[in-house]
Length: 204
Ligand SMILES: N[C@@H](CCC(=O)N[C@@H](CS)C(=O)NCC(=O)O)C(=O)O
Image 1 (cartoon, protein in one colour):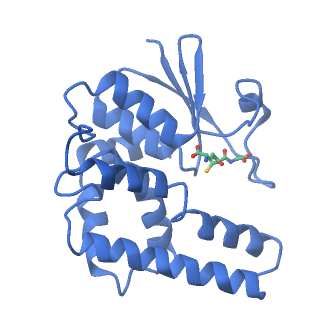
Image 2 (tube, rainbow, N blue to C red; image 1 turned 135 degrees about the horizontal axis):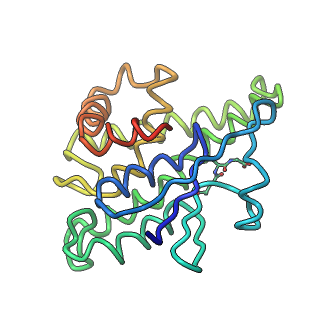
């Protein structure tokens, strides 16, 4: 088995565990644990890639970082029939790309920034307020999209749903989905998928 995923507990690398299970590709998972105090990744990851973050995928001698890049790599190599990603000539393709990249971009960054500000005791600042407003805008954008479409890329489940789930789950954990019924319905639907449940069994 040449595919090896380095997975960090309680991290967004769970999206790649899920994607591997959706694809049904044989793989090995190497579990890493966050430092209980700093919450940072262990040095073992630094030995594999200079950023020392998770997820990291090893495919033989190739090491690849960044969730979006790993997802694209896996889909290009292991989804020849495009079951989980639209073809480039499909009408869904632009929307698919947008969400795949938004998952680590405009949708995720305000929440991440706010998390850092909270850890630094800086939540009561204009910057934190502006990040909160950006987060609310991101959730409104998601709700507006999911009120019109069954999934992020359109009417079919794709890898964009795996990539966006962590952000939506984080919002749910903070009680931010109460006024967002389409987003809540989408989350329930994707969490009912067998591969999602199998991902939970792997230990995230
Ligand atoms: N943009 C990267 C982010 C990777 C990242 O920051 N991973 C976090 C887990 S959610 C991590 O490894 N944190 C531990 C650390 O920074 O030491 C991606 O999409 O993979």
